[in-house]
Length: 245
Image 1 (spheres, rainbow, N blue to C red):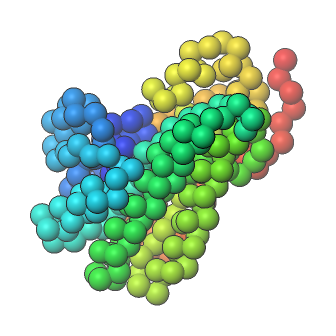
Image 2 (cartoon, rainbow, N blue to C red):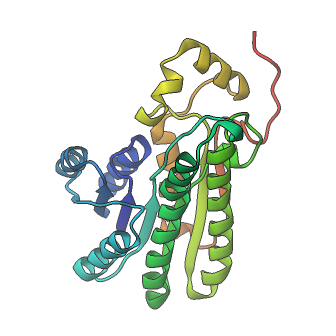
């Protein structure tokens, strides 16, 4: 399997890279931080490229590299993301734009480039990372909730557009996952307790658990699965829980 992973140096991206490498996939790991990517590439035997996922031409170049080097592209995953916890009235214009660019625009650029290549070969799987915040109302999540909800709309529409070409498009929607990105929450006893109280399973998730769901969606065995949003969130978006004391 030939796979491009954007945001490969992050918590979920690196877990996914390790898992796919262990299964024999050929990987191009893409992201902003050269040292993280190089270390991960050395560990997994993958190739790495530094790029800005909010720049359409750089994402397109990464897809082209996979196609030219390995003769096609079987999977494309966008693990790029950010977190902004502010109510709308305190969110400044540049903050809003950064959230949209980092989360939604990067997803669109990857989907556009990968779908174009995959429909020519009439096969492929694209997986985008949304959030439980897009599926349920969470206070102070207006910007990130909107961006992640946009990803769900993007994936479902694209799944309909490209289904006849054999291209599958799906989402995973994690809850609180222990990654460097969420350290502000997980390192604070008060913030962590509040967040865990919303998760019926009463714990934070691990990057490997999200990576497992993504790997499942990428696998050719799931050729009948498209347009889906899989919650990897300990029940946050769909289950009601009693208040935890």
